[in-house]
Length: 434
Image 1: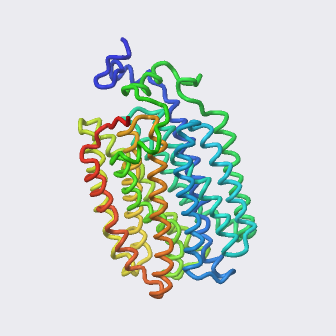
Image 2: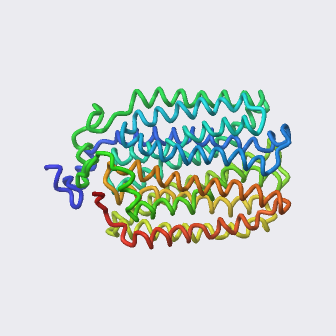
């Protein structure tokens, strides 16, 4: 039976063809998952070590906010730069450049001794880590058909939560066994190992010896689109670019807040210490993992059931927005594990919302524009994160560490993001950039 007869996919005969389609694309997804996990171990360590470093160096919340601010500045610069780099050089080389920069900068934290030197190390980390998602989403665009992209992105994005789970369990143990400086050096080895695996395994699917003709046909089932990079000046005139970018502006600062301030919040609110706050924090990010995978699965399932990508993505994101709202009451919850459940629901909903938002560039734009649009969105999201870092430090120092205003912002941000996406792209229709 010819492969081109499967209904709606250009691939033949459902059960038999499904059995013949290869699965090597999921090996690529596993590599993206691992890179994202390492990315988040390196990123979150500053948050997990915040109580330790604050005690050693006497930081205020504003000092910590300043260190995070410079990471966000670099992330904004690097995200948009890597979006363009990935469109020009491809995912393989683009990802390799990114992980070299972020691994060196991560290990440099072990040499820092002041707000300034920590900010310098964070700046380098922000430049390198900003390449993770532009390169990862470009790889998914190259390796997966539209119907599988949200699920694939949800899977590799779940690596963020695995990294966030590992960090509060691993890092305190390393600190207690050695010290916090050695912890940065040991975790940096993970990036070196991943780089070697990536360089050996990754190729474009059309050039990969492990990809069968049937799997290649499955990957390439969508209508062909241009792969040549498209100029920024054209992309910024398209309102769908801003639908994605302003959506990121609304929700990215909330994730940064969760990532960098939750360890300190749990530490102080529930009188935990380096030995005891790791498990509750790991539980929150374990819940986030289910959200990341579930959000991608839900919209992909709806598309397979016959819903349009527009309906599937937006209905999933609306459900996620409602699931975040209970976090408004988090500070009034006295029980640690009740608070973990409410916060974990919010972080899971964020990841599910984000998995769907991340698919929009590949849904809407030609392949040659995906990395650049993701880069623009990441830059705008990081600018929002810069403001959130400074605002959070100011609020906590000026209110005696009252989180009520911050949790209220978290509870409402996702409704605003979805409204912006819908107003700027009511149908999520495919655009042609002239």
